[in-house]
Image 1: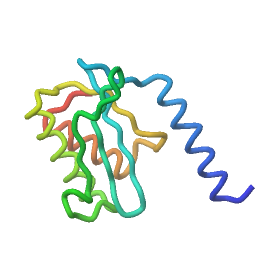
Image 2: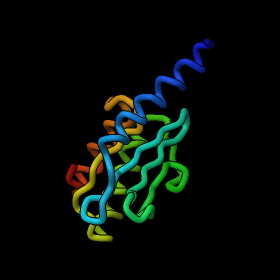
Image 3: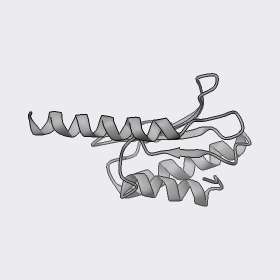
Image 4: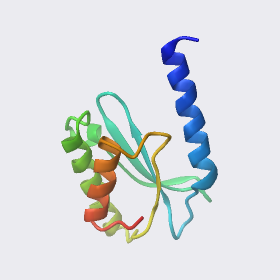
Length: 117
């Protein structure tokens, strides 16, 4: 098995394990984080209806999301948008990624902006 294929398979397994335990409700939606090499994306999702309540990304903000500073900007913007829509509590879905680096920076910036999880 090629290294990239093995890495992808392991990521999918971790993602599945996280999603078995984490689910969004109308009272406490799920904050989903996805990162790529150059960008970072975050969505607040209500899983009971399957609706995305709000989203933010480094692409939409026109910043470099491939670093911690970009992730912090996305997290701060997402937290402010959530406050405007009166969303206070979310459950965090790291998408199989480690809580480290850009994922951690986005989460901490969203907490500073007022989200609780």
